[in-house]
Image (cartoon, rainbow, N blue to C red):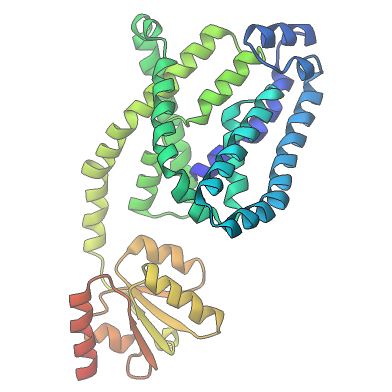
Length: 356
């Protein structure tokens, strides 16, 4: 979901030049005042700027996919890890500078560089090599966010900003709750989803910088919006505490009182999977891909509702109960997979099943 929000910034940045106020000369003056290198395309009409932006983004993604793989293979063959890291950083900086050269945000360039690197088969090694830089730059990002807040504005318009922050959080929370219902997320999952994403996104600051350079919004409005998004981020820990302490216990109580599902004779398969976490999920997908019907028993009601939408035979209940195992067809099943995350309990269940 977070990645989808970030990707959505790309068409927003492409459309922004169409919303710019004033003529091309005003664009050039604004760009020069901001120290931008985009005077070349700044003189073009907004729709041409949008086409150039989209073309550049497409060229970076397609060119990166075609060119980086053979280069990374060549570097990996040398066995020099330092060169590997240096080339990855060079690629990120080069794409960021190319985006800045046409008047777009360098932050968008680094995001596109991440998209390009994610397509490489060496992405896991790259991720571990760039980890130290990630921590450093993440701290720098939040420092820059704090430095961009006009605290004089916060002091003079505290009440107005509180209302705006509350409106942003409540409206986005309501939208997320609606999306959770559309995609049939149940109870605890939908609340966690809604509380965790109710704040403004970090790429809002990129959009605000772009709107300032393109003369889309007045400076005072952008300063107010920057403060609102930053304050909404500061409220997020409080929202998560409310969700954890007040909301989630209500759903935990409901799920604990739920009775086991009834399993009919037609619901049984050749394999029974007890627990459908990471390991059980892998086994279930492998069996399904080979046309083998499996009956799944799990104690997570939200997980069950999600899996049923994919056509799996999933039932709520404790697989340690003999009556539930009998109902699931244990007497006729060829295989029982114990995929619960409690080794001691799994051993006890295995002994009980053998005894029966």
